[in-house]
Length: 354
Image (cartoon, rainbow, N blue to C red; front, side):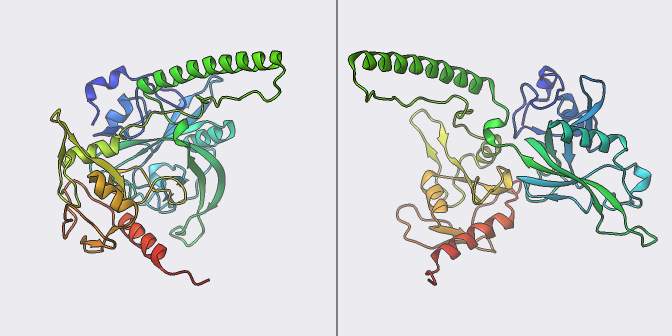
């Protein structure tokens, strides 16, 4: 967890990236989120920020329970706008009256959509159980608003009449467009310098070949610094899980220690990241594994059953696996990811019907 003392050193609140804060940063309270300049309020879901023309736009959203019409699928979010407290039910999940795009927070959200501004997403402890951290808030990066609409709530008003809601769709920006750390910025700069140098060498070589009459000059591949935005590094979520288990493998119990005395383990995603799986990079989707068991998980040699027992589906040699997955009381692996992994490999192992 980031030291609260350093929040005051974070960059000023702006649209998009906040200097010094990267996706995966965890905060104990909403006040800490505000001090980090990720969000401008400690109560509202939608944060507003004055744009250069004096109008207010939305710069951030906290997902922490929300309305019953909200949907969170990590990569894509369906978010219901705001209403005054007097227009909500006691549990805050249902509306008593229709929403309006003229309401200050909703108007700011719509203007950000029209201007193409990114939105910072912070997930709270009362959010979707697949992603939330008990008792903490986590900054999960930048999303773009892809659509806005007026639609109807699932639940009608107390008098039976339909309730109109203001709703937007958000999509997470690709990882290369997320915040870079200072070290990553330095690497990107180094890559850019290297690209410029290689291009100069290629141009010089091409010129020499042309002068010699050789029409088939060799083209050296160059690195596009814009496509390599970040170095391979431990994501914050994986690092926290590995520290929680002190680098002991949850599947086999092995704890590797190098000659320098430092332990080594890997953060393994149960539902893989990227297409076609689109798993989230969150603690509830990560296991602390040794390299061998990481491979076993990735190729489906082991899967986890509903009762958390470990099923060996292919030959496993070397260190024996546990009968039941080790789980720390502070690590709430979500059953949905375990089921996804199990179903995926069961489907892959079925013989083709063609």
